[in-house]
Length: 220
Image (cartoon, rainbow, N blue to C red; front, side, top):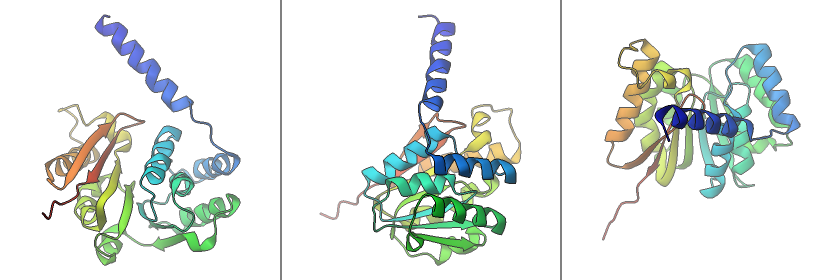
């Protein structure tokens, strides 16, 4: 198969992956609110991955940086255990209000979400070490490298970190892309790759994700 054919096949596969996931009515309504607010929302393929990771890990305690209109939160909650709690951090009160509506419409019990209004750089240092099963970083892209160190500290062994590169992900492979977001995305990716406690992978979903599992320590 030629390079052009490979590229076409890859493009078709990516399109299929993005369109194969069908969202329910609560998520569709949340997307409408996100559009009205002008807030970015994760692609359905990214949301589905978050749900799978939460379910596979039996996630009980999850942290999300960047609540947005609640779409990624809904996906996370759909995979989390019934007795789980999602801690989600957002600077914009208007976004959090929209997320609360989405959680209520989806029938999520109020005690399963902890919405914190504030900057993640201030909130994350106050959270407990090795207490979380999954951390999803989808905040301000330029701050992603600064979130990584705290995220690694917060994860229990076997826990998973997911960083959404967003639009900057398309520019990460381009050495000529030197805008702040592209530089931050590269730095976050490099920090994760260089951390010996993490088992990383780059996933080409939407704009791109970096995921990593925190390795277990052999104490024998």
